[in-house]
Length: 509
Image 1: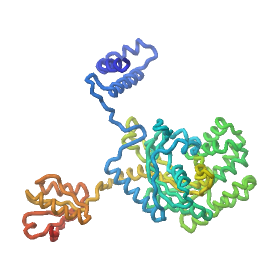
Image 2: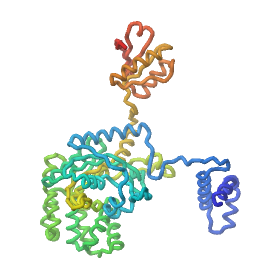
Image 3: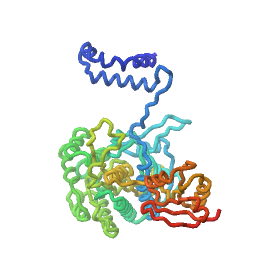
Image 4: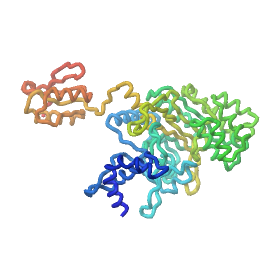
């Protein structure tokens, strides 16, 4: 009955809305015109969803919140970015795997700290409680434990899902790709960790996104710092999640959260503030090893010693110009046990929102995209899944492909770069009518030879139309057939850009 009432109400609502809303406002004290319009919009939307009086269902044509479509130009840019990343992963000796898009709910539960509330749970299907994967790291750890793998260098590129409040202007979505590189196995300290940072440096340099910085810290340093500053053990992870907000909030707001919401004293928060403001390199690690508070923590000293070793390898990899030891870096995920790192663009500038996210927003609105890569060491995660608790040390990095793509797309628009959406090398064209069969024979030979070729789906297209299609699509060559060329057993090859022409003999059928 409710649905019938809403449909009937909506049917006449649009017609008399303007005439009655002023009278309604006067007759209903406290009700504004904006509130009435909002309720009317809801009713009209409901009508569209349940169908009109004619019984036909009317679809709301939009993508789900936090998702978007990608047109051919956007996909061409994405493929270019993917190819750069995959090429780098392969250059470093990685092999690839794949895992299901959903996992048993218990596999994902308790691995992400405060972010666990963002996991998408699925309805019970066939007696199993399932959830969509939140990242690619936990499924990787489950894969290692399940298959008793102790050594592997792998990359995995796939979609993950987060029930987040999406900020599409910042490249944040509910469905998005992650590009992960991980090294699992027992190796000498900091060598795999340094290689992960080298990979981030290579990818960001090759993509030419602008200046960037890779921030490095260690969970053991953070935990040691919390301990010597007076943070209770049971609040380490909670305070770590608060510190992780320093890249988005000023210290004053972070301190308020520590004191007012997490229950720390102002004195303890101020001590933490002294440390999280520090940045440097190997010299900072050496200085903190002599610090009267930090030197009391064996955990912190172990982390600081590893930071020194890490920087010695980074010097050999020639990437220290972009790496900074930053004590404010926390990374909120619970499974990190050692080195953590995050790459940010220092000249990200203004990247406009995608068209889908701009509706209702000022046209000039633009924002920075923030972090574009992150990762760290998680030595205990595989052991959480292994029946005997056997640990497999792991370190890895995840590339933020959506944020990188937002920048690449913006750069292409600003530079008016012509992006090719196909890889066609040759257009098979005709200069006269009734040559369709000859064109199809020629294009078959090209396809069979592995050449990317195209022909217009018309029997007698105009030559000008065929040439214009090549210019618009960026096809570099045209193979032109004509009656005289067929008699001579040749085809004219025309370079679209220069209009130069040469004759080439046709292969025998």
